[in-house]
Amino acid sequence: MSSIIKLIVLSLLAASITVAKAAEKDGTTISTDKGDAQLPAITNNPASTDQPIFKFNGFGTLGVSHSSQSLGDYTIDNTVPKGPGLSQNWSFANDSRLGMQASANINPQTTAVLQVISEYQEDGDYRPEVEWANVKYDFNSKTFIRIGRIALPSFLYSDSRKVGYSYPWIHPPIEVYRQTSQTNSDGIDAACRFSVFQAMNTVKIIYGQTINDLPSSTTTSKNLKGIFDTLEFGSALFSVGYQDRNSTNYNALTGITTGPVTYSDITIGASYDPGDWFAIAEWIQRKSTTKVDAMYISTGRRISKFTPYFTYSQNSPASFVSVSPTPTASAIQTAKDSQNSVSLGLRWDFMKNTDAKLQFDQVRLSNNSNGYLANVPAGVTLYGTGFHVISAVVDFTF
Amino acid sequence: MKRLKTFCNYIATMLFLAVSMYGGSAYADDIVVVVSARSLITHLTSEQVANIFLGKTDVFPNNTKAIPVDQAEESSIKEDFYLKIANRSPSQLAAYWTKSIFTGNGFPPKMLNDSVAVIKTIANNSKAIGYVYKNEVDKSIRVVLVP
Image (cartoon, rainbow over all chains, first blue to last red; front, top):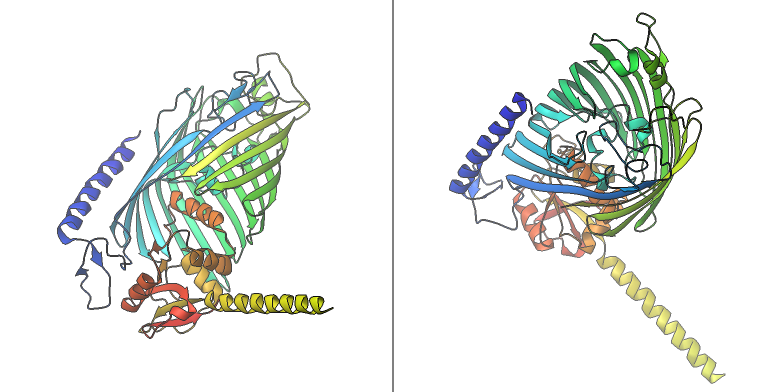
């Protein structure tokens, strides 16, 4: 945990204690029009519009998956060291996690939030990590600034990808979401909302740095800059984003031994969700010394408590964009990693704040790579083969 | 023959009763969106109301602060309101707010126990907006939308 995060966590605690003490002294207030001063009122007044000062919320997923390919592990991210397939027959690694969030309304303009997530991570344990710790200041109802560890909104679902209850799938399509596994950034962001004709437009800018621990290395990205624009019109949403960062993750892909390498991502996403059904599509192009693109399309229909859905997802092999340093043989092979998936699934909202999902993925590896399979023993080539994955989860929030 | 006539009468009576009961309950089930009688807001569109209740905006069209208040969890008025205004079932609404809460975009409106509490709150607060059944409306509040 970096020192900036420690500082923010401590100041959050200090601010919370101050607010709690003040609230204790004044009693709960009720907002009315009678004068500017807030009138002291009976605690737990049922007619108050005030929100509580502190809120505690949690989410979690218990998930198990099985892969028919026993010579490699099917992992949803490069941060997951092992999964179903070679290492485990049935595995909890990909989709099981627990998250807790505390938020505090310090004053009407200022809120602080701390989110901690426990999930299977690069070193093989479930040690909780700080996902977010930030203070948000609202200049007005349309403009805010946040400082601390904040969500990195690379994709439509990247800031909620760990919260299974919030989306239809078992997890967002891996061929696309694996391109950027980092979900947060230490720094600052600011957003502004305004109307464009009948539509609502939100522009967000972000600046910061990230540290991403992988099973065999750590990627440090500095000077992360991004701009994201989201246009909402009724049930339709359209989003474009650009970000770049100077990253130490260069060995595997480029063979360059002195960094940093500049990575840049262009992302485009669109969704249409009138209620009874939905359609979602996203595309990303990630560029460093190689260029790779990935996309998925997904659609589903909501029939009472059931949501059957279909997804097609793929990533292209990477092409080398710069000829300057000669890539190593392993970098050339890694660049070929490419696969596609056809997924069928069902979400069942069987209980309040709880769902169960079942998903079947048919994965096909490209003709000259092992795709995103992890831990494939040296010399084993599964090029061009297909396998299937069965996953089941229960998502809940509290 | 007489028996058939009686049977037809019976069916006709039942149909009449069913239709009038349905009509009666449809009247009682009419939901209206309300603000304080002292509010300057006189009319809102479904889309504007949906944006306020889904936390996509926190102001009325005249740029004054809007504070939405919800009816009780699992109440039929709440379920009907969100189906009408946003075509969202209770579980879809829960998923929507889950995403919003855990991405730092905001919390659902405060829930009040019943229409009495909703009316009392709105009457006392010109920023508040809520929804009640049409036959519950009194002089302290104003209807701004019949969704």
